[in-house]
Image (cartoon, rainbow, N blue to C red; front, top):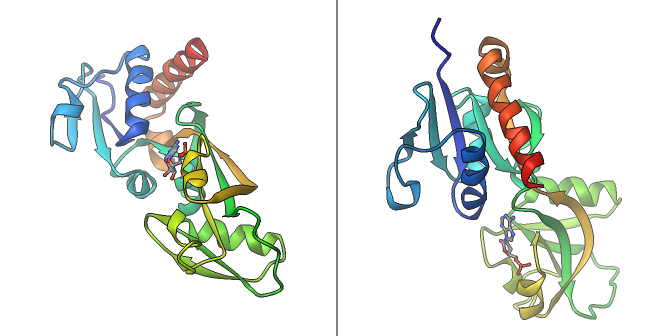
Length: 213
Ligand code: AMP
């Protein structure tokens, strides 16, 4: 019996640079240099495994609907998308950062409804609701750090790594919403139908994470 075919959706960009060494340690390597190609789907050294390289925000969608059997995505994007539609069996412990609120340095508390700019609107909505705070949400797709100084928002919800981006824009981190790292997610039907192959890949990736950690 030949092994079931598996498509794995990887997040492009900085996460990919940390993902590929782990996959190589787990015995899965793209057949060509992903960084030098404009292709989106790659063969690997294994006949039954293909790698897709797409935007992180699209990985949960491809995995939930089964066009990809497995995926690698940041916990931030998984929380924003909603984590009900797939399994999340493995933390790769790469691309670690924090999802935080941030405000201008020395901003005084105000009784007015807080204006919050973010691309993580679902996460922000949930977080401030849990805090019992009424907010006005402003959806932005980038350059969030500019919003407070231009008067568009009082606070932002964004990814913080070193904190340099915040500091350079006169902001400071306030509340931690979630610790973020990249996770392996698996389509629910594939986990049953292709269980042997997926369990094998997960086991090798887990070993690679433990060896590197
Ligand atoms: P820093 O200045 O080091 O705090 O980095 C903050 C910026 O880098 C944020 O605006 C994020 O967009 C981006 N960033 C840092 N780490 C990650 C990560 N692990 N995943 C996605 N984006 C990140």
